[in-house]
Length: 207
Picture 1 (cartoon, rainbow, N blue to C red):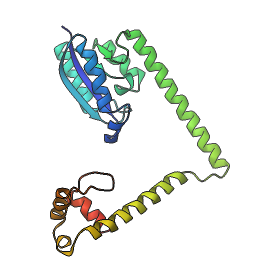
Picture 2 (cartoon, rainbow, N blue to C red):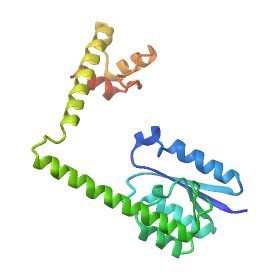
Picture 3 (cartoon, helix red, strand yellow):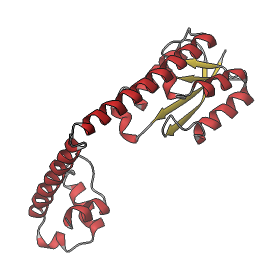
């Protein structure tokens, strides 16, 4: 039975909510391995795909060599964004399987990687050209981002005021850790719906 090593990558911790998130990758790989094979290890990186020196990726590669196992990924871009890197892995005799296209040959993986790399280059060029044209016309860049930041600050300030109103004087005289524990016990969440921590309490109460 074929031995597989699963490799997962997200660029940020928040990508868990997107189609490129860990949950989506895990489902794809689990479904693939269930069709025939044994999963002997899993490696996770939270890092940009531009960096091929990722620690967990290197561990997955070394283990694949030792165990004569194949590396299975959910999507090709989760592994690397460089054709040369993917080609180098395949030339070392390391099996690479993409759960999204399990029947792809090494030759096809090269082609798909090359097409993806070229599309990223074209997107980058179009983006730079669009920004340069907008700047030439005198458009203020980043305005939407600044508006969103101001909106978020306003929401945080309003939440902080509401939070203080919920706490009586005795609670407010406690340490940040004790206040956080009190809020969590009462079922109160942050403005983003998360648990309170001492630093979170401090951030709100010192706004």
